[in-house]
Length: 178
Image (tube, rainbow, N blue to C red):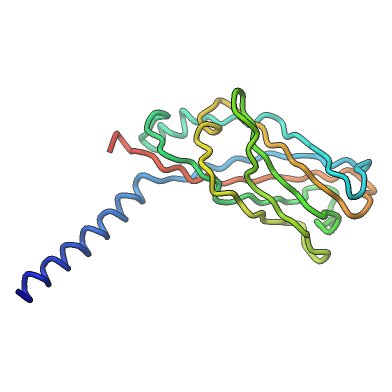
């Protein structure tokens, strides 16, 4: 009886490890970069909406590189969204009070995907945002999407600030239909 229990436990452990390894093969990352300009005329303590240029997804080719297709995508979530000030040099994000990032695509509703509330006055020129764990596959499967940024500043900007936006999406797909 003890021997059978030991064998069953061993098989269960092997099965769990095998499933986790299989999951690794069905997941991959997709990175996208964009930028937005916060104009110097931005008002204090008032929300301002700013739009990025359209981001081309090239999803068909990115899926093909990873041996999958649009119809085999199970879920896409945003793992990381990082902002970096590219100009002016030497500036930091201390001028921000809050920032919210939304994704938009043709025929789909606007969806909040990342945010940072109460930005510290001692923050640097890079800022990582909290990300919403929502399924974004329909947005990324489109040919392009737009990121809408809503900012509230708590100090006046003397010059335009260009912000680079780096996103990392986690794709969970069926590889070759598995």
